[in-house]
Image (cartoon, rainbow, N blue to C red; front, side):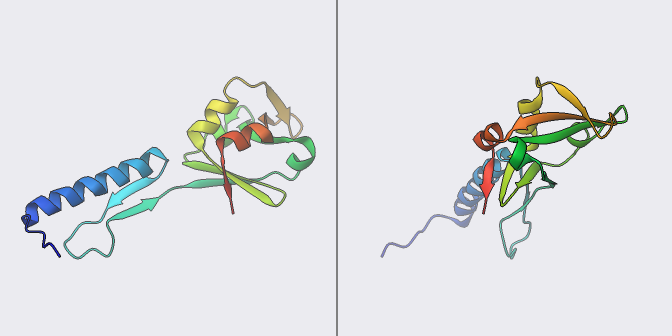
Amino acid sequence: MAIDTAPFSSQKSIGEAAENRVGQYFASKGFHCHKALGQHADYDLFLSASIEIKADSKAAQTGNVAIEIGCSGRPSGLNATTADFWAFVVGHESWLILTATLRRLVEHRPIRTANGGHNEIVLLPIIELKKHAKKLG
């Protein structure tokens, strides 16, 4: 068995580079990454993300999820959220999508009114959502 005789500082540098690489991967997927500090940390990275959860009871029948973008003339829903991800629950299935991706998907779709004209929504076909989202469970 070979014993690694590389100095500690070299090993530390290699480890930190690996942590940064993994952290960059998760950051590119929408997570907030926080490196643990201290010699005796119980972990290297802490990941967090915020999720807006939408249950659409009509989507299974219509084939579309309704995404609110305005209410009473003000930005709301997708146009106001600070969430990193959106999760859609349709029937017994759940789908997770990056908010930025969802915004691109609805960007040029027609705006409709709902709730007596108080809400502005965009309809996104479930089939399109599934192409860009991750199925949960």
